[in-house]
Length: 264
Ligand SMILES: [Cu+2]
Image (tube, rainbow, N blue to C red):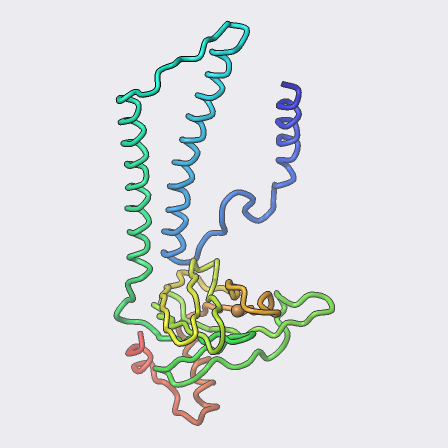
């Protein structure tokens, strides 16, 4: 009991330490419907696990107390009970089926590419990313300077920005030039492997403007931990201006508003 009280006291005294930290319990607020749906699966699973935990632990504690030695408890000798076996088959089956239902619903949503949207090719290599916009005929430029968010004292990081318009379907085709990498942007709820010789895909539609840090999430070599990129979500007019700046450098005419609408 003393140990339990000590653990409880430690937990309670540690609580204020979490105050003000970034999401001590749970995930950052996702900026896409996809991220919200994925969090929904997590929450659903959490409450099932929590319920099972409470029931099992309460049962265990009750058994320890009820059949303790000082009560001269005697072990039962029966080996089968049809009713209990039926119950412990049916309940877990229902739980597994409901988890599968909920998961496949989100999987189907994530894996169904929308008809319309801006197409992006994300090509991973050791150790960086190329982002091409095949329909708009340009590629994302190299970083202009060290990234203010990801650079640390003594280490400047040059991070490429994938700039995309807000409230727009972004259809990303993902592949790799060498080994297996992964396109992972936690704030947008997107993650998929980049496999050489194969084209994987995902899509997202960011609901708010902002900077979302992405990273390679497949151990790919010595600088795997440096494979950052940013997804910069901007307004549609800002994106058009940015796209036209890149097109101008390729000696291409500026995209008109009509042409832009066609891309969406
Ligand atoms: Cu990588």
